Amino acid sequence: MKRSDNVTMTRVVDGSENVSYANQKLRIGDFETDCAGMKSISIITTDQGPLLDDMALWLALPEIDLVVPSEHAGYMDLIDSLAADFAVDYAKVIEASACAAQARFILWEKKE
Image 1 (cartoon, rainbow, N blue to C red):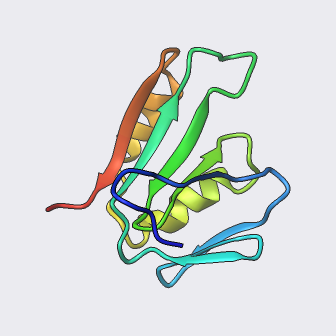
Image 2: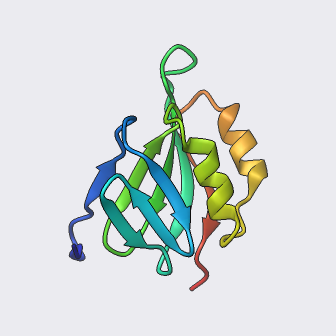
């Protein structure tokens, strides 16, 4: 799957899909992608909390953007696993957790 300059393909991870990350490979159910070209790791928030899930991990990859809702069982494990290869800013994770508005918190971004 390649995305064009004008279209970003986005996949929202279903809560029933297993998510794992190791050796620069992200696996979601039967889907696997190489994370060596990761562009950014962010948390996006909405103003829907605290009664509804209002956070998601957003992984911007060359071929696709992946969104993992915070209610997913592997959410924090995925952040911790990604931190082994990317300098994840945990202060931003805490800041996002306290946010009750629509926002984007960049945990890591590729330096150009």
